[in-house]
Length: 264
Image 1 (cartoon, rainbow, N blue to C red):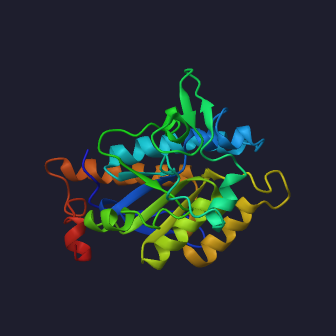
Image 2: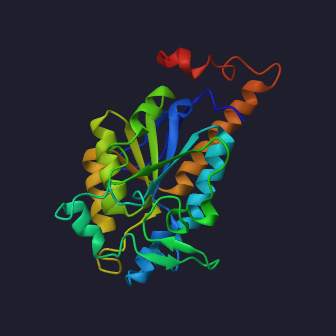
């Protein structure tokens, strides 16, 4: 179904967000087996993945609605080359942070085949089965926390005319926040869906890293909302599109295309 031609308003903090649905994309950050499945890197390291698992269902609903509304879906996957040549030198901070999690180690996937922790094109870096990419979605590997670092993400988004990014994924204070910061520096308008993200660091404390990230992001780098509010906005937008398509619709419904309203 084509994108709605009406501006879409989403209830958010610190204030409602108005976006051009035809120039919006949903970004799914690192929702892969290594972070969100038993047998993946986090679970093997004894890191609680329950929060990430909780974010799966609302994320799936958002992706289904976004595709129906014609929004582009972009998946980012954390994964290194088999020779670890893009992980950094032995004394590089990126390598030192990951080596303690046994990056590159050979493990056994659920189907009995060999896999490797955080290595490209293995079970460990596959997207969670509940969120499997569909035809037309974009899937990109990254080798640092930010999805913009040494990737084609910015070029692809600009080629598609994308201006608004709706973020889901894990973890909130690391890869999600890093990518949102870099997106804001590149003049993208960012909206984070709080219930579609998760953060093991400080999980269960009175104020976790997840909470802290939500606050700093909505104050300085974008806006924060929830999946139900985005779904409501998409439903309203879809209703306008249907009305526009009906013969004999009143003039106030038969709006000009959004691209003509906002100059492209």
